[in-house]
Length: 115
Length: 112
Image (cartoon, rainbow over all chains, first blue to last red; front, top):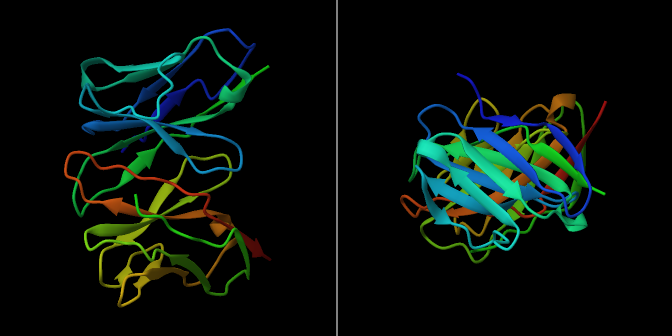
């Protein structure tokens, strides 16, 4: 079974530039998550999709971050304009089941450096 | 969300058992206890989860205290590949709106 795919793996941009990250979840997984992980910290949830609808985006800085999930499959996370503090690893995850049988599957992440 | 407390770091010798503790004194009756680990330069991966009873799988065992205010992840025979950050997470079973709130975890170092 193919895992969660993310691209690019690494990205370096200057502050005030724009950047986009792409995620392809595991086939059939209805729920998709984007996390931000700053060095030395645990992942922080940015946004959660159920199919192509947003379930939770309470921690997404909406003035500069946006995300969409087309047709309930792939997803794109965009930052515009980027700030120095956006330097982090951006992780995508997906899940299938809810309730007792619940497990999130994570991609390898995209490491963003803003200079 | 109910919080968990873990030691920042632990060390263990290779091929010996490892016991990773987690305190969750404010856990509610419907909170599941999940463990994930994150190997260097990788995304987190699921290890194990439980509700009330002890659980075993191919990766580890989860021992849950009778009052559920603490739990212990047990790696029966640590290898160098088990060096990672281990996260103990409480999850509310909110059907259709499941999510995980990560803390800073325990960084496990395996000594050859």
